Image (cartoon, rainbow, N blue to C red; front, side):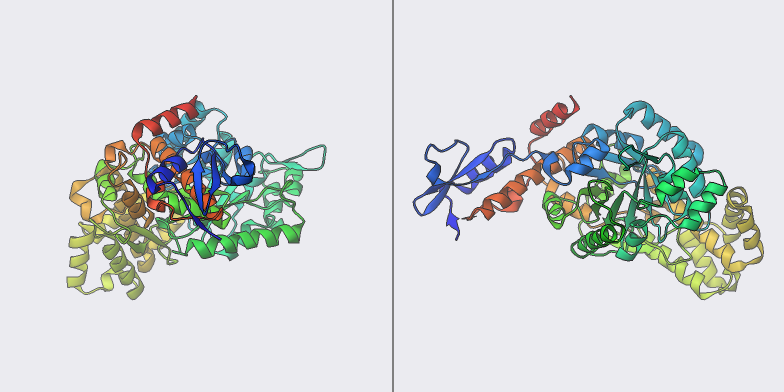
Length: 530
């Protein structure tokens, strides 16, 4: 049975948003009353809406494992868009951040990780490991670098199967405790879009792979034996309709399926949650507090934000891109071929409004599929592609591309010299790769070619921030953004408790979850930093 509240919607909203204050629901005749004063007559007490700290949402075990206050993770957007400043801001706000190492040189990655290690000390942070099927040596080199700098976590993104680099990171440093449990020095966050891929990370590493790593003296016999008793990943991030690499799966379907895969893995291998932690996170489509609350309600242990991070002050992209992102709506996105997975059909979700990249990238993929060499195209078609998209002769761009691959993968460069299809793929990939750099650098003359990774969550965030202090680009300081989202999520969770106690006629989720005033958020963030 439900009852109306005697309080006005405005009063209920104000009380719910005071998240540190417990509230009491009291029967008042045929109606209910919400008050912050403990009632003298306990028989009239219907229930309590508890104080909810933002850190109460999600898994307490996750917070203990990684030493964080919030179950919020800032995802690793490649090209250092997830910059050292963004990772630091995430940590200072109580969460955990991953540096966007994808597409960077080993020297640049090392400099960034060393900066984070020096600045954050023992606080948890991680590094992106982007799958490189055509260059597995680079995967191993990034992992070797992370091991040398004692990075505790990697975010394995765009993987369709477990690779030696991922297994090496997981296995290195494993040790047995006196009580028989295994202490893990490092953790793999596997970002997946399908439960069958999650299943690969939810089982121990392949025995053959462990033997090869032992033979190569990458891990010890003892580490291999211990790795055979653990899942490859400590955390599985169910990546739904996100920016960048995505299968655009609905979060409400994907998270329960990954949770079911975790349960199956635990039952099959006899892993008790208290002994072998396996966390499931949610990513994609998380742009406002209502989405946060919904994802936690699905059972997610932690949440990962991405698209909205890119519009923040600390993000390693250009002011021009941030301005475009702040104007984006939910539908202002499109799918496009990806640079790193071009030949195998990998796709990324990008901003459509203000750029022609999605259409142009798709045109290049269609051309690659249709002919065996660029020279096989009709002359007029070649000219249009060179003029409108590449903006230089194909031969010139291939010359530059060849120099790059002669250093990175000489065998592949040699193959392309005599194979027109490979030469075309590498050259088109060069355009796709540079398009994200042009965006990060804000090259106005290449604005129509900007590749800006973006999901519909960006539009949701902009809608939520509209009319608040978070609307302008210059006010989107990530610590304030994350704190505001977390506090509004706590207020909305209290609304759900009040609803469950039988109250109706409640204020709307939009009213309860709107951003607080800047001074309130700044005080909350300052208190956490202390």
